[in-house]
Length: 153
Image (cartoon, rainbow, N blue to C red):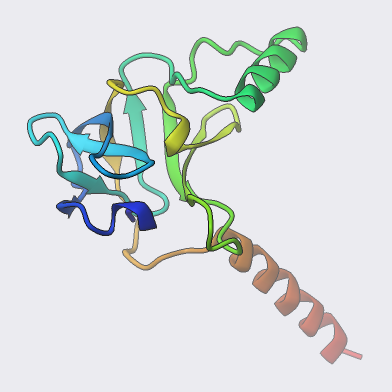
């Protein structure tokens, strides 16, 4: 999906094999993806879309530096963070950007923090096209389990 700040941009859905580039878009405060040969056209990803970056993912932000520093101190290898899954975060807050990447090492990075010019390829689209809110899905499953336990009394 494309974040709310890209509503007025020309956009299209991602396809398997698309070669994407991280970019800024005119008249918006956000970054996202455009196809390698379609500059200015936002490529919208569905939650669960898997990407492979050509190089380790680079991003801005103090929190990113703190997390990287701590993980390096704990012995995690941060150099190979090239695989990512698109997801949406902070859904409960309508006044923030929601589009993010979850890296293979567990870090979650909002697209607005990505450095421009990074190249990635769409490896896989989600199994179904409907929007999955991971937070609601997890709580819904817990509520169903609790309900099942309660009704068994």
